[in-house]
Image (cartoon, rainbow, N blue to C red):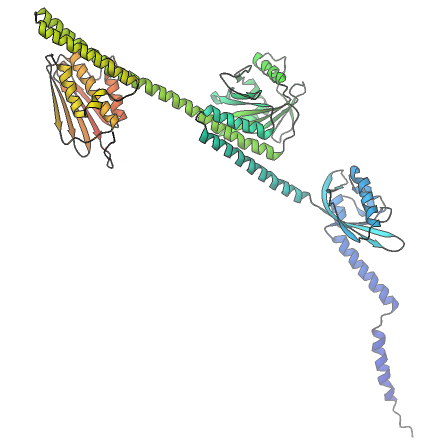
Length: 581
């Protein structure tokens, strides 16, 4: 009987079958390799970076989709072609040498462009900067070189913009610092403008420059200042053919963009008939024909001749703005053609703002000087009026009294009047000299205000028929020196008017001090006058100016035959402290 079971053979067969499944067949291996290659080629094809492989003859054997995007070629247009077609011509020889040197080295990969920038050339001929690395694969029969390349145009543009911004910021900071230092150190505004203009010339490397002010709503451009032959010249002393440019030059469309839209302009080859003008980013336009020698306007012809004599070839015209409107132009001149980067233009525009600030300060200073001259002239007029004129009034009164006394054979009284007249004349002369030197009146140097006023009444009316009375109410407090001088002069003027014109018998001076204000009342019982009428002389006008300068209020009441009353109120400030002498 056969006791062997056929099922005993099954385990052996079961073991052998899994072993055969773990060992792929040659066909399966080939298929797997083909699949891996397809995946690899797919990855290469869709990569954003440009991937280019060349053989030992530097002919292109691989050109992925990223390379097509960067260079603008389809892969069918470049496969089998020399790599030189993707390089700027000037770099082709050096690039071939670089690959040959790399092939002979032991390296299998390296970065490209370590010593100089790498550039590629697109299908349209344009060039672009790139970041690249190269590797090599030795296949025995041949060596394949693969370059992975990335277009860095945007990165460079961003970096250049950042550098430009930094350059502009540093330039503005330097220019502003120089301007502020000049402002702090220079008392002459003309010198401040000179500092700013020299900064502009130094920053731009200019040969010379001129500054033009826009006059009467843009109808003319008037010369403000210029730097020529390293000499700063203002409008009054500039050796320049014309102080203003005619409106015709501004009616040209290009000039309209400069003056109305605030755009900068570049004028090139100004000595040529084909001179061109480029405004901002606008296309070039012919320079306006007024600049040609044949132009009938002699001023503009002289201007071109002047620039030619300086050897000027190109001009950068930059507007100066106030509240967003063009208020003038800076013309920066060069003896050679210039290509201006955007950051240079922006820096120059920023410096033009500083120049406009300097011009405004110069104008304000001149206005201040004019105001100061007018104020000093008025002060001198008041002082001379209040010393010489009033002194002469006293002299005349005493001389008239002496004449009347002599007519009555009163020799002693006449001599007294003559003596007082001489004393008043000498005192008036001394006061006039002190006024010219802007010194404090002598009466206030020797006495306080109340004593000086009381002495004024007694001295001026001595020997006359006018009875003068001084009344003081309240407790006198120390007043500012300017107030004391003004009040003394006002009382002198009022008393002189009474003596000269009023034919009065009595004059009263009343001064009242209280906590809030000082009140001064001056009155007489003379002929009076019409305050609303016209009055020759400086007297009442001078009184009004003095009261206004002290921040007070003035009132004058008078009528024909009813005398005159002058009232002055000077308020004290709440935090007023005693004045210092």
